[in-house]
Image 1 (cartoon, helix red, strand yellow):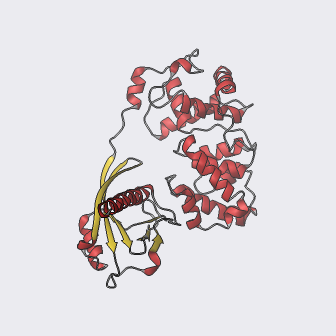
Image 2 (cartoon, helix red, strand yellow):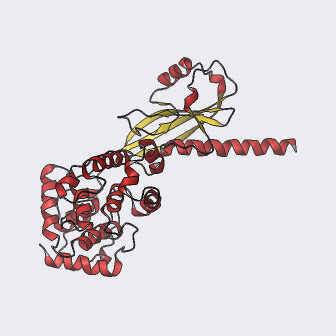
Length: 353
């Protein structure tokens, strides 16, 4: 254990740490939900989703009764949707195996879907079950810079980082320390333009240099993907949605039909007997997910009493209040459509006037 390192971090936390976050409780259920939400997502983004989630499902018993579709709707917009599927699966396991009581043993926590070593350690430590080091993205960045550890992502580097994390983590005030490390990483030792003058480790022998910063910025370009999206609207102001298949990006959410080639889109339209003449509008959406930049061409089709169209009557949803989870890109498409529709409607009224 590095006493000098941990004491510097803890002193900074006393003055600058975020101590009033809504999940700062000793309830392992709420800590679990927050830790899953915080995976690859910033605190400011998580807070409103977390508050709404625990208001809707205040405990494991209420969560275990929820359907996956209900949870997907509540999670909609937060991204990385496999997380909520894992929460759903874990809740079922906890309900059956632990009688809706969150397990206290570290290995039991680690065995739940969607929980790795860092998340299990954070839940266990913040809940007061044990005292463990963590290695999230913020902690990795601090340790890499302080000890000048390679930015290569391999098992050897991971092992070194875990060893260093365990080395600097104190046996007392462990929960405050790991929260402090996450706060320093997100507020001071940031990915770009770290504020070294305000760093609690500045007086110690930090090995961070500009050369290390250049290495850390050496990232691969995102993969470019073209996608074709259909937003089909009927005369009742309903939109046609299909549930996205398991194993696909955005699985278990609902979306207008989408394709990765124009040929497949046109084949689907012919199969459903939808004429190209029904196109009402066309616009592009740029959307980004992990390591992917997606250029979406959205085609808006308006169907008015088209009896020949072969679309399931069960797949239509009220456009003004879609009650299933949808991906962010489709939420964007709906908002753009409504904005353009309302604008054109106002223009028509003004012409008539």
